[in-house]
Length: 132
Image 1 (cartoon, rainbow, N blue to C red):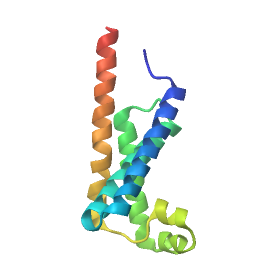
Image 2: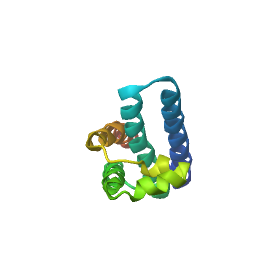
Image 3: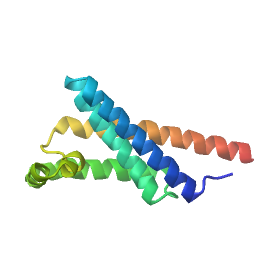
Image 4: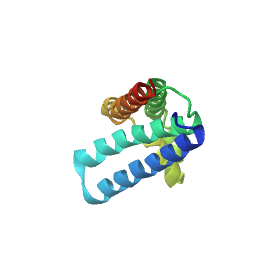
């Protein structure tokens, strides 16, 4: 039994909501490096869920690659100053685009994505094995 696109979308929307809730709780209760790095990793997790929400039939590894590439593109775009200007006008832009480039973030995005890719691959493998 495979997961239908509709179920996948519901699951990914739920997962993104959980990732966002966890990020907001950490932001409200913690500080420093934990807040910064967990937020970056959870942003990557939300983007991964977003990729699968938009394209539910995407293989987990491909979704992971797309998510990390998107996150890196957003991070590099911060070098232009455009995200900072947009973030000054909009809280949503600030949450989605960030404000300033941090090269450390480039390493933290995969930290939020790779465990999800591994888990999805494991679930896929287990489902296939049971089907055989």
